[in-house]
Length: 603
Image (cartoon, rainbow, N blue to C red; front, side, top):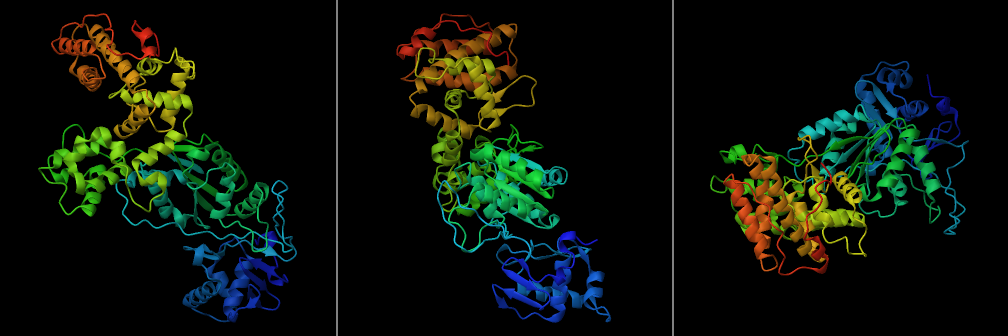
């Protein structure tokens, strides 16, 4: 049955869609007031499709409607549909009027306004005092094509397939992951795969250049072509934009890809819920560094690219089976005249990819530096990664132009307590639990009245938020709560620690923590720690000894740390010794050279 609003459309005096005016009785199609030359068969096809707007009209029905007394081949139908699309400019600049529904027929998909219906006008904003011209405005559905990718996508087939499947069952899916992990790349690849599944296409809403919560509505309106025609108000209120969005989306079947949501997360969460309620045919794929926490949201956490295990692959061919190594090698080859992956360089390439945590942005930026530093040079400067990988593509958005910019963006969105916890935990090299986090973070803050309170609950809350914002990783493979910073993230956090003048305090806290951890391992292991326990201790103990042995450290503490490690390796109990008085100590450290409570965060 025909849709009620479209019955007898051929008898309407005027119908408007896009920039066109259709006058069925006069058999005229006007383009901004100018009549178009349109053959009689193409015009009859247009009338039939407009009369059934929003519905799929079968090929047989179209043939009977346009050629009621003549038997014609289906090729004639295709020819006249093609001619009609050409006249309408269908497909140019994102405009869509007639779609081909495979195996079923054709459908007219542009919104239509009857001459008997009021125009959707833009009201003046009383706050801004903007003035409208006399001409009324209407909203136009003018979608834009998705951006094309210039390089192949590496290692994301499984994620693309999973998310594509999810969108067939869920209307709101959010891709969550750290900066540079490839959320936008995967989202656009999913959109490319699903574009034929949505009658009204896929539309990208890029929020990267918007900074105000109110801008979210404007970004969506712009992406789907909801805009006032010439002669409208200089400023459009959110209420009017939302009215236009509702009018445009409520009867459509499309996918919205909302990219870069983290800095406008509250507004995006509210908007997605509202859109899903008023537009039952719309699905949303969002990307963010944290979940929207919106109703009906399904979160897909995007992992880093795959890197080999602890042992290096046996050959370059075996190494290239891992997507992280494959991406690095392909980008390095593009920037260097030398062959990057050989049997001689295999171990260094794998180590570098591990140090970069399989992060696609970090791998691409490192590949740019291979020609000047070489793979060995990059590995040797692992502690300076954040600064080292500070140059990327000139044309990339600021947040993706370098690893430093990407992390700076995330850091700027953190609350003050979250920034403090993030900076101070950068001294840790291995996994840590809640008790460790509290011991490191609280050191030196109890006497600082200018700092926010750092009790156990505030530290734990900040840590949890850093996990949700993809800045700290929780190891889900173990039953207890175990956390770590990725190497690239840790390098940036260390940079911020030095910048804020907290480096020595945090390093001293870390050295004391390393001593206590060795004591606890010795006691808990009945004087016989396992190799696995010693291996987990090694990165933090080595870093603590290195700092304590430096000019800024404490020689006595360095000796005690070395002795304790020797005892563990020799399977001798670590004897508890008085915590050494440092030769140089900041005033706030003085009261902390005493035993700390062991009941914090059982983890």
